[in-house]
Image (cartoon, rainbow, N blue to C red; front, side, top):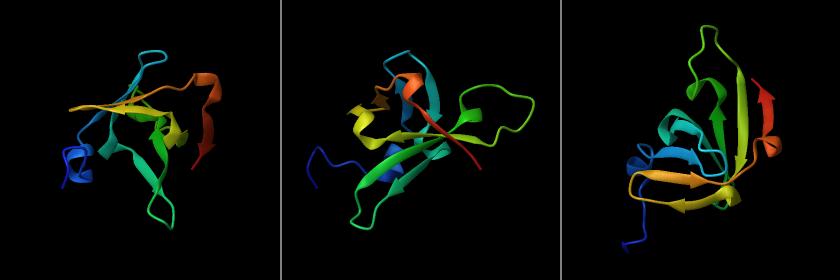
Length: 91
């Protein structure tokens, strides 16, 4: 494996941070990833309640296109998306 190769078992402990507004979205392992039939990463599905304290269960998810991932660091995944661009879905 090359130095640029990342294993999901390592990445699931990476914290998701939106560089656009500084919001943190917990760890990749506490959210979901959509992978297409060719094995390409398409979306990160953020559990809306995973980054905020709530008393009631929130069944809303946010779809972040993989193209919004700008950098994968040693412990973080940096995304860049304006909150107005979030696609929100109820589950």
